Amino acid sequence: MRDLTVDWFVGHARDLPWRAEDRTPYGVLVSEVMLQQTPVVRVEPAWRAWMTRWPTPADLAAAAPADVLRAWDRLGYPRRALRLRDCARAVVERHGGELPTDDTELRALPGIGEYTAAAVRAFAHGLRSTVLDTNVRRVLARVAEGIALPAPALTAAERRLAGAFVPGDDAAAARWAAASMELGALVCTARSPRCEACPVRGLCAWRAAGFPADAHAGRRRTQAWAGTDRQVRGRIMALLREALEPAPAFAIAAVWSDDVQRERCLASLLADGLVEQVGSDEEPAYRLPS
Image (cartoon, rainbow, N blue to C red; front, side, top):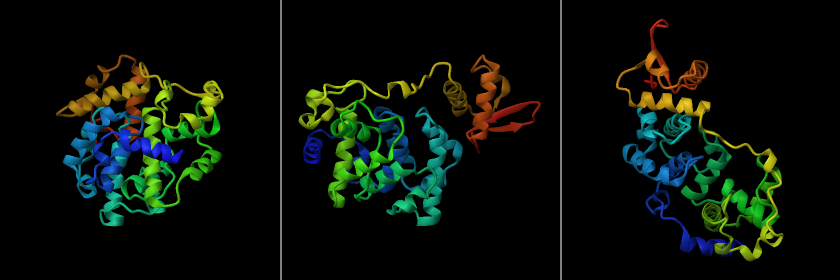
């Protein structure tokens, strides 16, 4: 399976800037943070603009939070932007501006968890690690376990299974990580898998079993958008990104008619450090963090 997947990857891998020969570990980290729950088509132009403006951790560490949030624009989940800036500051302070290679040191940085640390080790440093995102989980669930989709939460058994597939040497392990992830992203997709184009279809236990339905369908939550707090928060953030001056309360009120929901969302943005209040409590105004 590894050989077939890697051979397929050689001819089908997308030409993405964070895979280029001149990529930097920091550039890989930025791409991984941006790609969390955001499609490549939206990330690529944002990544290019970001790397032009802040090409090193030191550049990002010195940036104003408001500028970082404006550059993040509509990528979603803007806390990721501030965590990335916090991470850059920690890299400068603890590691002289260079991303570490050690898993423990990577995971000690703000905003870097198990997956991101493994991805940086594999894709930035070419080191052996078990890179297990939703795409890889889906590929292994279908090919090795014969099920439509993995369980909603990552299990210890999945970690063991994924670890068993990782080659022993660094270079082969990094290639497998990239190839298996790309296979899940382009062919073994969640809703409309392109089984006829899959290089490992002859080995797929799910296909051999007759494509059984998702056993965990009742446990999955769908993420709505219209009318949710996420939408309200997004509208407030969009207003403040465009505002040249702090936005008065009446301007905030205009973005959403439900007073209770809007105030709840504004309070959550304040608590998350994504918005700050200026002026008096009687005549408050709001802006991105200074």
